[in-house]
Length: 527
Image (cartoon, rainbow, N blue to C red; front, side, top):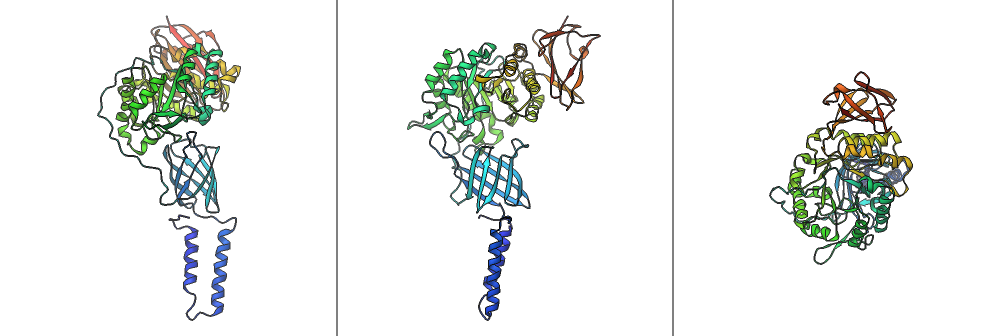
């Protein structure tokens, strides 16, 4: 084991060594026998089931085989201080800080940049190896790393000088569609994309505005002798797939990144930006999600703008209209420079998960970005989790309402082939969609009072959308006062967009009961 931190192993090793050094030279047989007995005791102790070894060191895991025939690799660098663990997890696709705890030989590690409520890696030290489960489903066996074990380095490429990439005249309202990652992750393939295209049509989602069908990570193969990126065996002919999607009245999206590898460890666009942009255009791609991940091993956060500009300029040079989605997790005040690199939308948060705390946490991070939203350039708090089963129907209605209020892209992430009636009613609520797609493109800002948070969004017709969210554990009464709505005159019409009925303001106010984690969503116009 690669121990460096004063572990019990080190202590026993010093004891054992000291005992050996005292043998011989005037020592009698009884002394030698006692020393051997002590040595055996130490060895038995270290092998006992309850004995705890240090996790300090570098651990290497080969990982599974990727769908392009390459093997994933992970390097886990840990330091144990008492029961506390800190360190770094590196894979082909990313490098993240980890922290956690060790209890005996059992350990749990959290990724500092990700979900802090559930550990990312859970495992045990068994016979000098780490046996763990990563992400709740991937088995990982890590052995003490050799000096040759590391993630391959790549030559540094200087980012280009800054210049303005012209607006591509796309995404005048927030993009709507479906993305594969939340539900399928690395299990997405050509046939699934085709069935999703069919379902977008048959469910009515296409006609409601969900037009982009986006393939996320793990479609990539390897580069040919000329450096052209191929798709892997799951996607035998990307051009034919694009033609099928287009025949359904839909548009096809794809995924890459500015680093050498994608988050899942597949080849990305580093050093091949212009070549990949031409490939995507030739296939008929309409949308590119461009994920930072391994680029952080090469570039600093103050280089985000020129790095993303490089692909923005490459897409513009193809002449094909391709929506450009920057996925950089809110780093580098992206809302200030996103349009200048040709971006149509940009992530303002870390990855969402199908949990109330994650959803609310992501939308709260939109508050300082509000002034920068507008036609052609949108703040993106990540995809929709509606219908994936880990929130209540009330929470999903709140999810949809808040994304509409902050003018967020509406990219569904559920299995639209088998939606429940309730999930359909949420995703297909045309009155709520209209709030998101309002051509004025303004983003709501909240005011909090106790457990209630009120978001008000100006609309193109001079009215407003107002959402009151109950963050508390119990239902409560919410009152909307027309004097707070900043509309030009008394209320002319008010409509509850989830109840699908008009409601009346009395003496300038409207009140309704809002369940825990529920929402009251009104559209209000002035006389």
